[in-house]
Length: 157
Image 1 (spheres, rainbow, N blue to C red):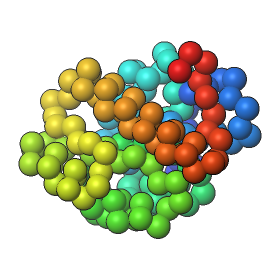
Image 2: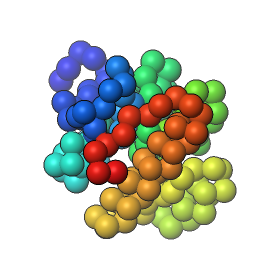
Image 3: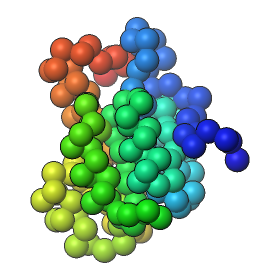
């Protein structure tokens, strides 16, 4: 296990991006390692960058120091819940689009009413996961560009 609390894969979302520090594409916040393995499997081939944090505190710390386009958060965390992450995002510049992964359909409406981008309910369906994350990423990039920050563009996007 790395000593760094933030484990970032070597994948790059836009290999030819000219920005010196492009945002991490997907930040995973949760202590279930299966979610990270699953998402890496889905997004590794396209070359997305994925960071994995294990708690609300480490996820929030990551976002204080770096940008992420999408935060995929477990409903329940070792030190809180997705509500804590959502509240912390209010003070993060260029906050990522929040997607919550839960075990009950009720989480969907709750996440949407709190301003989250989407919620996914287990068992996860690959098509739903890919659509939600790709849509959230696209939404964040458009918002980032609208702010005049010059988000990196992927070829063919």
